[in-house]
Image (cartoon, rainbow, N blue to C red):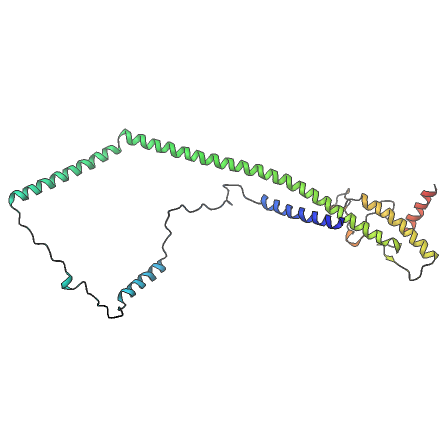
Length: 283
């Protein structure tokens, strides 16, 4: 039961650690890794020349295609469809002078309007309007800079929170893995209490086919040694540390079921540990 709970907790912490690492890899806003700007609505996409050419060819083919069903095909370029030109009206001299006078008046009026429009562009009103547009553009640019600065500050704050949460999750994950390792080793050595341990290292556990007084005594010595071993396991630290750390308690052989022994018990077998245990009890 405890093993399953620890495994679920470790799985949850690993997933949370992976998510935090992915969030910490995000680029700051506005940097080289930022997203590309979205296309402005209303812009017309470039037309594919191949599709245009195919469309023109299709249209030309449809125009040249003969119509089925006996529908008459009219030739609008023929003489019967030509528009007759309006005959030129001969004006009297007074009407011709009048038309020329009106045309000259309209031409002079349009020229004056054109000159007036050119003058208005250089007036104070146009200059004020231009300055106002420049002020509006500068305010918009300043607002964009403020928004980018706010986004950058929020990104930095979120990054600090993620780093703090990642350190907390990593520490909790190490502790859970340490607890799981202790639990596995305690269960392993508890199951070995009914066997006999060898004096040679690494310790091998065996069971005789028939028990006698000698093997029973060895089995009791192994049991005492296992009890001492379990105490050391519960006090040991199985977290991985850097190589060469003199204070490291990392067990290099924890995968084989071996637990770290105390300095005085490191080079002694089950019988020596059990004999010392009996001497301590007698004292």
